[in-house]
Image 1 (cartoon, rainbow over the protein chains, first blue to last red):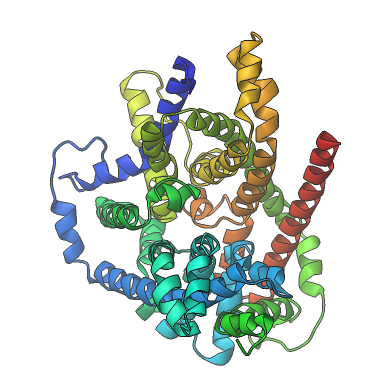
Image 2 (image 1 turned 135 degrees about the vertical axis):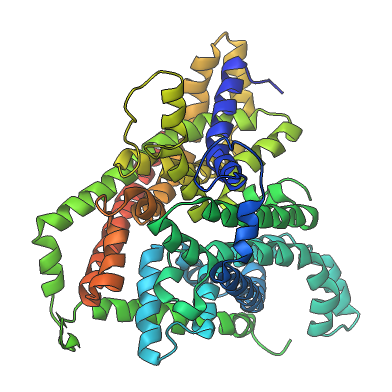
Length: 266
Length: 286
């Protein structure tokens, strides 16, 4: 292995600073004891974290986002796993088209998904409901989980299944005892990635929430549009910590390298 | 097994297919028909069909300016991402696996943090009394703050931050498929690091740059949160104009028409770009 020279190291250091700067600044600002934005903070205080508790809007929005992420990721998993088994393990007519269709939410600009969902839901009368919001998020996050489950499914070794089938195991038994255990990390990794994507989603969601289903990113966005004070920074810091905890969990179960670039820990 | 594999595959995909059919295909078709309706401030959305919304969009220099600005921002963002992303992916491919894991976390981890939060960070950095201007003033480098908020430059900077991981991923994937012995050959023949990079690594990274550009360009052209927060009320892009039409003016048909024009122009650009890639790569292989 050839090593990187000094130029490469400086370049990477500056780039890492660029990537981390906005995140560091948000965390730094949230720790200020003052009533305005300052960085670096003149002292350390958890004042603005306590202020979150006095702001029921943010608490309610966070709760909606958590519930939404949970249900959307779960429903997406339930529909994506069988589809991944079909697409990843069988050659059939229309396979490519089916996969392209299921991945298409990644191709359509999110602002167009947002207005399409808004139009559709107001026509059928579920506009702004939690149920409708969940279905829309399922569409947005299914591609992420499908991709990860597909990767686990295509890596399966068929011999154990053939052996089980030869010994008279039913399809269901083969799925439950052989296939499922080996794709569980992919499913869990996909679920968490889908959850994070739903939890962070803004552009689609902002079109389809009503005041009682406003999610945390939408609440933050509308707050920032009016004013930026240390409160938005402390709320943001809580979501950063939450995301980092989820990343650690994914790393343990699935491998963060593998989640992010499709290789690494096996 | 009693069923044919094809029937079984479709049965397994049926739940997802049903959901995508009703919740994706139907809404997208409805958006297209919506863009053909008329709108009246008192009577609301009409039930007629005509192209007058498209005529209105194409006939108004205001929308030309918005589309021009949006695509210019997306193009500059894409170029900067390519210029940063190629060396980053290359350096990362040469790192030891331990340091590489750290670097992957630093470079790609922010992808998992909300765009709203990251853009808030940029707003705090770029404001007239923000971190950068305050620091420059304290060091005596400037007297007047440099205007970075509510400028297209600020939007590009924050968009690069959001988009560059996608470029690095694409270039990375291309570099994984390269033949490392070509580099060793170049070096053993006395080529400098720069020559090796330019003549050996870069051509092998090109397919990744081209596919990464597609992703970055289309995501940037339709980005909403970053231009909405950093652009303010004046520096509009297509996505924020669509949002205004839907949420403030309530002229949904016009908003839908603008969005469809965005979708079609992004698709046309992507398809022509793809053609170009195939033509170039085809030539390279011939």
